[in-house]
Image (cartoon, rainbow, N blue to C red; front, side, top):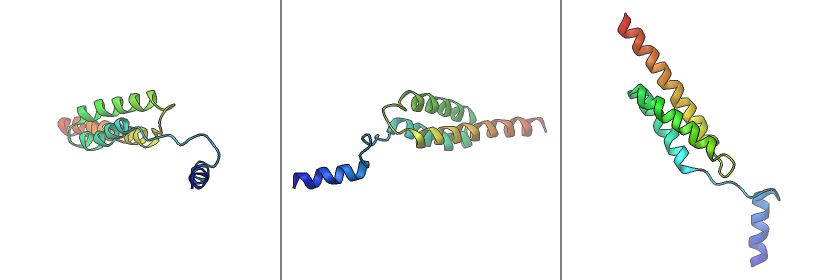
Length: 91
């Protein structure tokens, strides 16, 4: 029974390094940066930058791809929201 579990583990990892766990703090900040970037641009800027920094800090230990991408999306949305706000205020 123990050999079967080891074989399943080796098959899941394909004999490579162990799978990295997802870093949930960076993922959470990345997820929160998107609605905050749409509703209040400054909070989207802050959360987007914090998410990028957190995900870069832990990229060697954890799988941070999703959190990094979501943080970038949130940052871009907050930048677009800021540009739109300035445009509408000057119009």
